Each structure stands twice: as structure tokens, then as C-alpha cells.
Image (cartoon, rainbow over all chains, first blue to last red; front, side, top):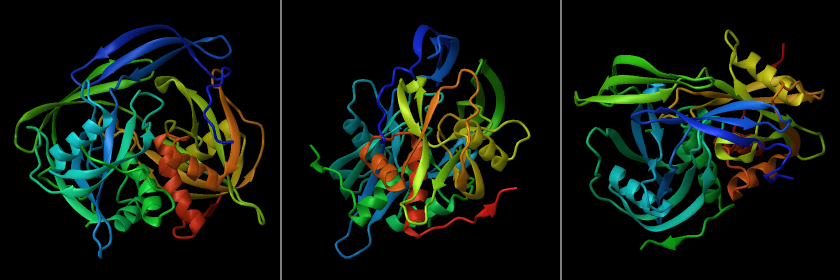
Length: 199
Length: 199
């Protein structure tokens, strides 16, 4: 029942494409397309290289599991947001390499084990962005390596507290709320990813 | 521990703002800001009116709860996506009015009871967009009222099947995956929203 097959009767076909903004950060294309009924339409969207998000687990043998989070001011929404570590793919980088780099740069942690949870599309109406979601565990702390001009705070909290904060509205970043669904099922033992030892 | 207080030491302050794109669909601003260390930086972002998403519940007295979903081609990601009904706020409209309008227009359903779940921010790095999330129940079916040029299919599926599809990767729309966290806890009885009778 739940499938996302590529139905021809819903598809829109490209006619021509043009760049309408090459900003210092955002690139926007405007495409002419043909709708399923043969009529013409315009589609404008941000071109994005893709990103990764990391769910870093601090699993103690006799303590509740904690997660590593960040507090960062996000200018477009004019507030400090609580989020899992995340960042854009660099050219030529695999998603796992990106996950390892972003976790280390932003939090200082290196992880002994990694597991891919899935992928989400944060803004399907107007961006090509995807975010691949990775779990990380066996964490070894170290100093963060923030870029100049990058300001964020790293902290950790019980995983169950994060899930409650998503339900109750203290955490509203969509990628982090989506991550909480995998985290919820991981904690409950009702879903588990395939772990690999880091190279 | 988990709080999003507006820490002065993380804030970025506006210096000046300018429009760099007024497209047929996207409006983009470029602001000059001052970082917490006093240095200058540029922030580019999409200006969005905000949106709502509806989690429509088909609750039978002796059948598993089902949810109403849509399959829609999303051009920026070049695929048919499975999503909960959603749409942008019209000028002057409350979020509940928008939720009722979008549910009716896209699926034909009217709901007898409504409850706000929360809000998510889908793209905090480069858009002002927020999405308010509403549950709807006591659904009465009717014909959908799609705009010309709007193509989507409405279907329903067991709520537990949707949650599994999010975990396993058949559903990747971030707002719908985030919604599945509320749905999961609603179904389990570990979280419940405040229901109101529709006016």
C-alpha cells in the first residue's frame, strides 16, 4: 500500500532550466515543465548538495542512553535551535565521511561504530536537499574544531528527554524531530540499524 | 537541560536587509549581520508565509487506526512522495482555518475534531518556514477540490504501516516522518493532544 513508485500520471517533465539566483549561499533554478495534463508550469527551487545528520549515542552499561546535541542560533528563524550535529556534503565526500567530519568538527567526538538509519527530504516543495541520517556510538571525546564564524554549544541529554522535548515543543527542528522517531524505536528495540566499525 | 532560551552569546544581529530574488514562487533575502564575536557575515534565506500539515485519523471502533495520505510528484526531488496533507497559509488565515481548508481541498474530508500537535521548522539553515501540525478525526468524506494544475492521489493506510514505512525508508518527506513521532505516541497512549470540536 505504501509505495512511492514513479507513476507516469503524476510526473512533471522538464522543458528548460535557467539559473535565477547564484547568491553567496543559495543557488536557485527556475524550470519550465509540462504537467501530467500537458499544460505548462514553472518550478523554482534551491539546488543543494545534500547533507548528513548524526545521532551520537552515549551508551553506558548501567546508565540511561544519552545523546549529543547542539544549541545554535539559526538566523532565518531568529532563534536558538536544538539540533543533532549536521552539515552539507563537501565535493567528492561520501556521506559517511561527511558524517564523521561533521561530528568531529562540531563536537570533537570520534565514533567507533556507525550505522545508517535512512534519508529524509526536508523541503520537497522548493529544494533538492536530502539529509542522510547516521547513528554513531562508542564515542571518544575531544576538542571541537569549529570554523571561524561558527558558534554553537555542544551538550548531552537523556535520549528519552529529547523525545519528550520533541513531543512537547521545546525542539522544533524538523530533522531532529524526524531523527527522534528512529531513536524512539532504537531505544525500544523495535528497530535496529546495521552497525559497522569505523575505519 | 533541553531548553532553547535566546542566549545573547549565540545571537546574530541584523545590520541591513535586501531582496535578491522575487521569483514567481520564491522570495530570497540577503541580510548583513553581526556575529557574536563582532565580525560581519551574510545570511541568505527564503521568506515563507508558514504552512500547516494535517494528520487525518480514520479511527474505527473495532479496526486498527488508519491515516489519510497523499502521493504527489515533487519536482525538486524528482519523485513521487508520500505525505500528509499540507499547504501554505493564505493571508489573514488562522492555522486551523488553513488546516481545515487544505484537508478539504486536497482530500475532500471534513473533520469533526481538531487538535494541535506542535510546530516544526523544516529548513532552519535557509528558510523562515514553519509548519504547524494538526491532528484531525471524526472524518466525513467528500470529493476533493484540487486547484487546476494540482495533481495528487489520496489514499489511506494503517497508522502502524506508515510508521514502519518511515523507519524503513519508503517515506522520506521530513514533515511526514516528524509527524510519525506524534502519531506513534498518540497510538501508544503516551502522549495526547487537546481535542476541540470543529466550528
